[in-house]
Image 1 (cartoon, rainbow, N blue to C red):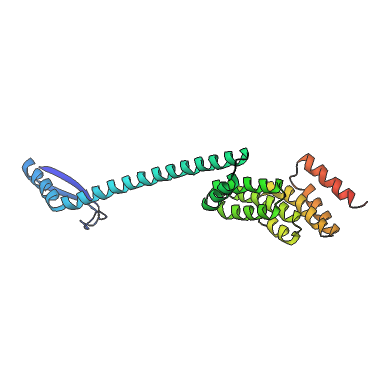
Image 2: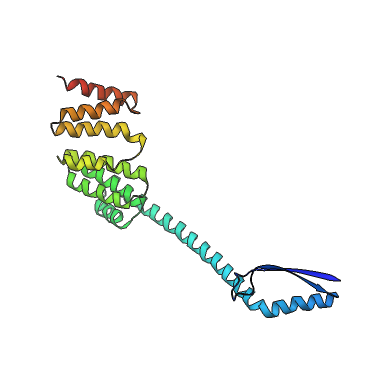
Length: 228
């Protein structure tokens, strides 16, 4: 007497059967073979659809990942082209880089905005630099990159005498690694507003944080200069 064990899954298309283990007893191999044939005659279409759907999902996933990789490569190449032209001083390079930065809502777009902002700062065009940095913030998704952009934005806003805006921008910088640098710039901003006590408090907090020896010493010098 032969036994055939079959395990069916209810999640196959067509609701073939509730999930269970079946043990059927047959008198000979012919009955066993006939039972197998009947199963595939009755459920073959559903099984085929399940296989097709599974293969379709796999092909779709591979296409999507390939498309994402191709898109990232193209964006990277476009970024390199725009920045190389920008740094070489070619005519219309700034316009091309601005177009790329505006259209690329990725980290590459944010990096392009940082490069453009530096160009504008060097030219003394601080309003344009601020605009690029604000745009870069909307494109950036990485917290560290956002902190870099916010730090540069706060410095530009300080130069534009937008002290309150600069202080608000500093509040957007997160992470222990930024504590000392933010404290140093906060002190500068508060001092420019005439708030010596606020500047002292900021620098003292910076000295007590994770500041590097050089930055810590510089903040101590600034504190000492407040007494002069």
